Length: 605
Ligand code: G6P
Image 1: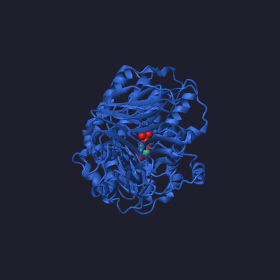
Image 2: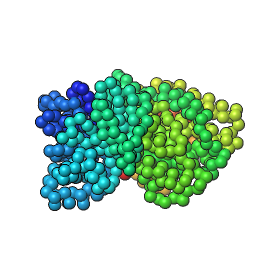
Image 3: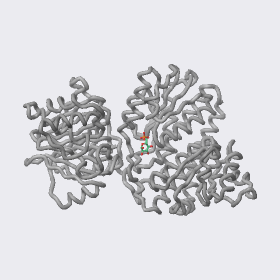
Image 4: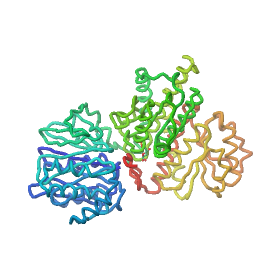
């Protein structure tokens, strides 16, 4: 949701800024821009569209400096054009911003009355002008920034350059993440660790309300109250070789194929982490699970698991709904928040709300030291590694793997699972990497299926039980990268309305592993078949045997997957759906890694 970079170096920082922006382009790709300090003032170049447009511009124009900031935008206020691209500057100040300034209209009116003219439609442009207003009154850069910040309502992470201070980048965070990086002869700034200089071996996360003034030789940090503070520096764990596409055309493809490894690593790591987790599920009365997007579908799957295996009542919510719903919370409940990035604004706000109610919280994140991980009482890190494709794949199956391990712990502590049964369920989970290899082995079949959707206007996905959320996730994957209209339904609900949408040959994916719901799911498939829909059944050998082909108007197309249980089928089946969506999108010529209008990490409400 907009990415910020900043760099100070002994050498020209422009290549470093471009590299940083390229690493976080998944935060938004509506426009990109950079500003550098030069002896002739602040120089800014920006372009609408993807980063490559800015790169082309830089090829034709000289720009260099030792201190600079950059931005990649996901538009909120103002259309995604060059005028609205960041940095936003005047003669004295240049600003990159992630977040939303809620009182920008009032500030804009006031500044216009004071003689400032505006070039863009953004909320951000009030910031450089507000700072310039105080500079004109003789304030120092730091004091001008402080005075400006005191006038801002909303959320922000800022990087600021001052023409009169060639040594420093100023930074401030309120509600949006910011991290500093330190390496040999350079210091950098970023919205997340991926944005930092490749050589930074130490990183430091700014805390909520912190401000920083950084130069090559010094860092000055102050907290919310303006008091000087020290923050812990930690080792930079990002391995940049993980961030290349290798031989894959898109990151999404690489990330789908990595799942046997990422799941194996996550299962092992989670089991270790759980031995240190001081949480006794026998004392927990109820669970709330909160997340957004694909992470919310992981919550949906977990609801079935916790209820069936651990006998726990579970409420699930999308974070944007939960935070304003005023749900009364049971003091003995545990709230689990799930987030790949650990920075999603709605999820973070929901977590803070739960904490203010005095209830225990557990975060499942992929990015260690993210805001959500630090805010929760307990946190577990999935081992998906950096996920760069905007559509989440390996992070989702890693979340499910972690949740499955927690479910087993909860079931044991609640005396609903003995050691033998727990070990055999864990064995089933440990089979997943091999089984996922078997799904990947039928990639050509899934490719053909995906490509066959390219002329479809709509596609539907149905499933029951744990397969219902997988139907939702299958539909989400397809719509977000191929732009084919896709919806997921619980198979039993189909007859209560959605069946009206079925026309001749409308593709309907039926998620039908051999589980307790199979007979009923197959009946729902017959209802689609009777209305001439195109049924594509994902099932295993048992599902196939159960299917009564004679009753079908036309036999369904079948994708045969390995046998699974309620604990493993969601993880297995979603991989097939990811590949189908990927190839549908490819056949439609989509930019799979950067689908239109989306961003990977949504740090605004
Ligand atoms: C965005 C992404 C989704 C992601 C959701 C939640 O919408 O495009 O892929 O599932 O945010 O993100 P989180 O990082 O909290 O899991």
